[in-house]
Image 1 (cartoon, rainbow, N blue to C red):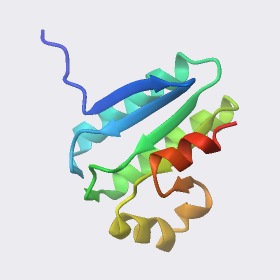
Image 2: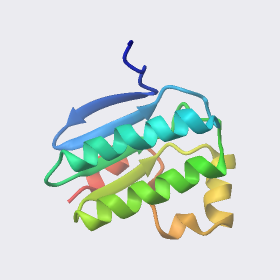
Image 3: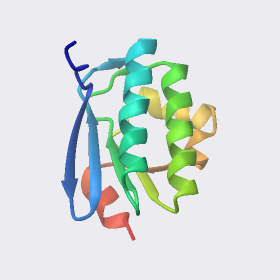
Length: 119
C-alpha cells in the first residue's frame, strides 16, 4: 500500500520546525485530518516543540482547518512548547480577527519576525 503523500513541507532551522502548506486551499476534510496527524506526530516526537506554520501559499481554509489549528495550539501548549503563525493572507487574517483567534495565536507578518520571536 503506498504511503500517503504529505501536504506539508517540513524543515528544521535553529531548533524550530518550520511547516509550510503545499496547497493553496485547505478545505478537504481528509487533507485537514492528514495535516493534523502529521503536525501532531511532530509535537509528540519533540521534547520542546517549537513550530512555525507558514501560510504564504494559502488562499482559503475551512472552519475545520481552523479547528485543527486550535487543537495543535492546545497540544503544543500542554507540552510547554511554542507555536507561531506567519504570512497569513489578509482575508484569512480577517477570519482570525472576527473569530478572535488572533488573541490565542501568535501571528507574525513574516517568517523572519516569527523566527526572532522564539524563546
